[in-house]
Length: 367
Ligand SMILES: Cc1ncc(COP(=O)(O)O)c(C=O)c1O
Image 1 (cartoon, rainbow, N blue to C red):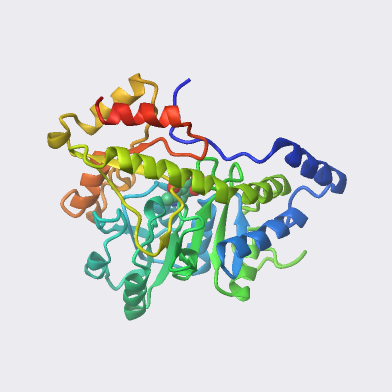
Image 2 (image 1 turned 90 degrees about the horizontal axis):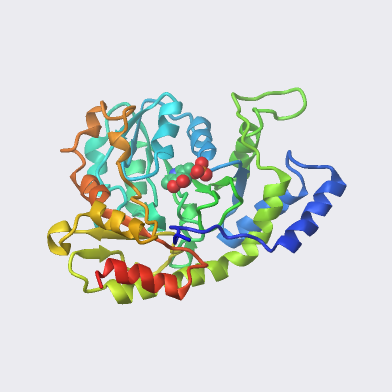
């Protein structure tokens, strides 16, 4: 059995069956049912945010946020992310403008944002890559100076806090993914976090075709509602997520202890004041110092039954839809290219066994 890069957090099957029984009895399986309501309330409390709207995945809240904020023209974003970030801009008929990343964090470099602003810019869409918080204060200052909206793709940032405050409260809106591969999952699923009841109401309309009531459609909505079965699954997984994050933390501690000092391998350390969620463990290979390229290590791991992931590689700006954009050139994005060309995410999940961890470490440390 190969060691996989991730493993889904699953609720207790008996408890899930019990809730399925309740759903069967109620015959209410979607459209803002009781589990949907309970999960939204429970997530507000867990995440320390005022309003949450559940979605059927983490891509649709990105699309819907841009719609709701009536974003047009150009949107500044990062090429070092999952492709859904940029796709959401494209699907809204806007032009993505790529800005290079800060190599210290992997996140969009705030120092480079202003140079990319034009009269057509209306929004910034940063990503908290690997759950590492962006410099939200700097980004907000720039947004306020130029009157721009900020939508955070927080797909990786479930439960991340800075000095005790949720990172999800930054910007105009933040979006989450609850995909099976994430720290917290509802199989497929996602959410949007917003600041006020009025926005929550609008978003709830938009995710249900724009229906405000039986006969009124107040906007060009879409269908992105989470169903009752996933909501119930999500309620159960919420009980387990803290234990899962702590197990991931222990994996990160062991990786750091074992890999620190391996010539040509670097990784991120925890940031001061941040509650991390340990969603990924990316390492960066300097081929000259390490004596092997990133891809050689990736395939060596694979031959030895360890499935890492080159995440994020290739850069979004390299995909055919986007590579013709003026901001997609290699010269504009040197740090992002360097990171994409050197990264491997090592297996990281709550159920990684210590023998598996040691096997991965021995391959990477070339023992
Ligand atoms: C940064 C980022 N944004 C958006 C998404 C899209 O989320 P989903 O797969 O739930 O649609 C993902 C998921 O992989 C992601 O990693």
